[in-house]
Structure formats: C-alpha cells, structure tokens
Length: 189
Image 1 (cartoon, rainbow, N blue to C red):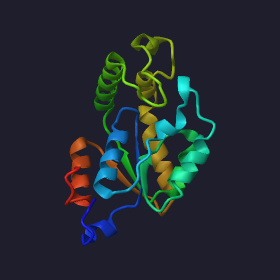
Image 2 (image 1 turned 135 degrees about the vertical axis):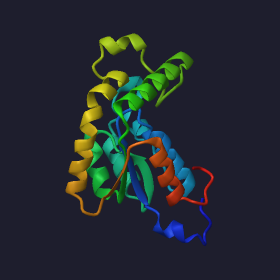
Image 3 (image 1 turned 90 degrees about the horizontal axis):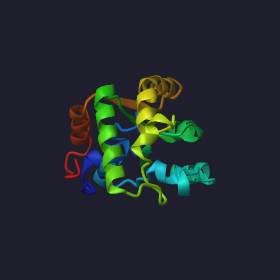
C-alpha cells in the first residue's frame, strides 16, 4: 500500500475496470493494481461461475454489492453487468493488445491450466483442449471471435459516460509505464 503521506495516492483512480479480450491479462493487471493501491479486488469470473460452469444466481447482486464500495478493481466482462460496472467506474484500462499477443497468451495459459489441472473458480477445471472444436464458447475460440469487438464496446461505454476516463494500453510496455506512473512507490509494479 502506498505511504499515507504519498500525494499520488490521493490522485490515483479509486474505481477501476480492466477491459480487454479474454487472455489479454485483465485479472493479472487488476490484481497488481489492487496490490499497489490497497483497493479491494474481486475476480469477476469467480462471481459468475458456479460449480460445473453454471452461472451463479447471485452474480448480478454480488457485483452490485462489490461495486457499491468507494473503491475497487475488477475486470470488465459479462453483458449482464457491463453497464453497471461502466456506470460506477471512474477509470477503465483497456488492454488493447494485438490479436497475435492475446492468442499466444490465452493458448499458453489454457494449456498450462489444463496440464496442471489448476482449479479455476468454484471447483471448475479448464475444459479439454479438444473441446475447442465442439464448444463455441471454448476460451481460445472465444478470445479469437471476440477480440475485434472489444474496441467498439470500450468506445461505446466511454462515449456514453463523460465521467469515465479510458486509458488505452496497446502493449505491455505501456501498461508497465502506466503502473509506474500511477503507483511510483510500490514494488507491485
């Protein structure tokens, strides 16, 4: 957490969304911001996915409760809460990385999770890689199919919300520079 006398702390964003394609690194960046800022972080996938990948019935209410706090960090996902999140956020960091970078990251992450049988949310494991051909929502297919639409979603959200500062980050170097400038005295960057 920044030093209490740090004037940058008072200027840093307090309600932060991290947007981008699946696999861009939204959760990783959100965790790092939370560590550097002291803001609470909630991984939105953990609120959405119940056992056996079923949507949790309390998802919208849980997101509403989390974002009712004065400060927080989370990812900008799921159509059912996208508007609520954008309405309440003050800053949106858009990881507008190339499709090649995102696909490389999502494939490596998906394979690692599957091979290691890493538990994701509420007991769920990454589906078999072979389901990429049969499941239109397989994370790798989803990342490929939705990558191009993220920019229009971000632009629309920003256009309808003058209070929302959008920071478009096109490369991990830009993300690191933003972290260093926003939280200059914290080792979490």
